[in-house]
Amino acid sequence: MSAYIFDNKSEEREFRRLQLVEAANDPTTIALLDEIGIQAGWRCLELGAGAGSILRWLGHRIGPSGVVVGVDKNTTYLQDFTSTPFQVYKSTFLEIDVSHSFDLIHGRYVLIHNQADMDILHKMFSLLTPGGWALFEEPDFTSATLMDRDTGNSQAGVNRAICQMFMNAGLNPAYALGLPRKLEQVGFHIERAQSIMHLCPGTS
Image (cartoon, rainbow, N blue to C red; front, side, top):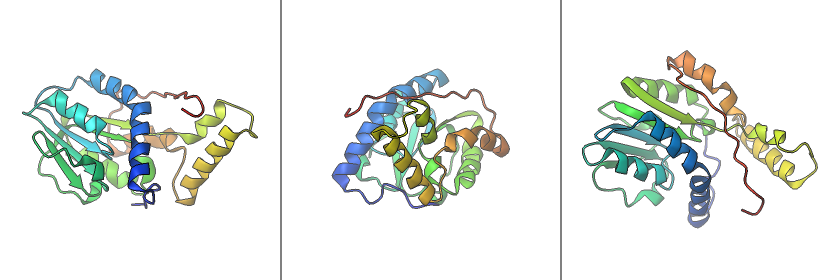
């Protein structure tokens, strides 16, 4: 387990960062979850629940007859998830002990922050029901260089700093590129892999 890169931010700044991540990525995540066809009564696990937007969406989809378990080292922004169908754990995924399996496991930008990623994947696989679904959303920060070949501009400088931040922590900024092979090694059947590049204007 590695130290989380953003642990040193103030609560207000971290909440705002999580909200921006949700605004940028939730539409894609929800579209992918919709394709899976989540049903009422499903048991779902949300890793790195953050500020809770996907946790909340899953709860609405599966209803009171299901269970949505959210796991995060920082549950400051998950204080409202106290009633059925929600269960929130302030912990790391490898430390929690759950007594049932899951029909769906979802994680977004989780594995890239963990040196123990293979242990996490093995535990995920063991907790899936037969025929269950796992949705992994992981970034490749090196791909931003494809958008602009001008290595002297501010965007390129920011991207280099992000990549270096991960490498300084012993992590891989291009994590997503090797994920399919790791999933196959663990035993997952890959239904589909896709690459999406988010385009956002400066100062947005």
